[in-house]
Length: 413
Image (cartoon, rainbow, N blue to C red; front, side):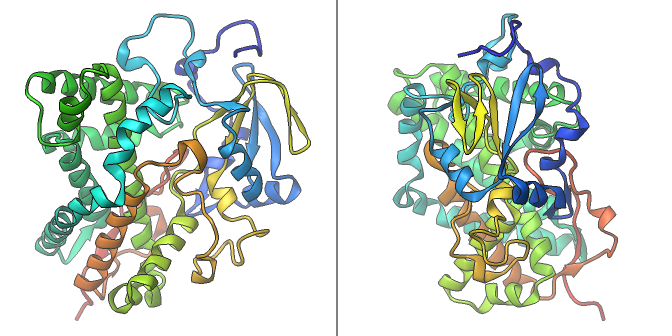
């Protein structure tokens, strides 16, 4: 597929993203920079720039994003041609569902999909409720002021995904740091790629260890039922995708969702008193409004083609701004506001098409249980600081979040 330029590019050597290309990954607190909306109004598809000899197009419109994300015929997700020419270890390779094309993608997704149906996920209800209750107890014990990111946002999805996969929780601190680093592009591809290699190495080795003694979680179940059909690297790559997608994005949603709800007390109260339909509306609008995964996996043009009036050459990169698409005023009534009147709009927080997040329903289950539990247990939850700079909103991260959120659990006095 590669055609642009003669030398094979290597994203692992890119130490800095050119400044003029970074605005799709920057925000003011939870809101994207105004430039993103300005660009969408001017043209929902634009040539963003060129990196390592690659033309990069940015898609910011809702309908345009839907078209690109659904078009597996025109675009490939396979990034191996961006790894340069030197030999790579298994853990340094790029794979998993998000960066794989059919037929490999079809084969791998078929392995996971049955594990993430609503029927199968219902078995996790009791587990999630217990983990949420334990986290809330620990918050109370460490109050009256706690860091909600550490005690709630990260703790709950991390424990859920460790239990789901059958992984020990003693890797908590190490994997938290690596998860944040994998989406940080402030140092180009160097830091992100290194962190990805470390986590994949661990998970490939976990699969290898469980070959002889399968555990109780998903890794062990896949080895028992399909182990003869899939090698350690394939299963480790799948586990890596489930692990990363199952905790980092949910952690971001819980942390940022709590931040938004403390500023919208009527919605926070509705989590306690509202029916299931009302709660679901709040969850969906939080997903649309916050959309922690800022851009979709890059798409690579298979051939020269026209993209909404732009000539895209074979090998060009097309980046879809999920945040931009979720705030398109052509389809969203009140795009820049957290407003339940927006909740009927299709959002792209979980992507769309062939590569839509396989764990979307699990994420919704966690958000519903955790946020309703938080609102019920701590109805007077409030910010412990008025200084937004103390919250540690991330800069240049593909998965956006905040790293600190000091909160007061109960009203003072």
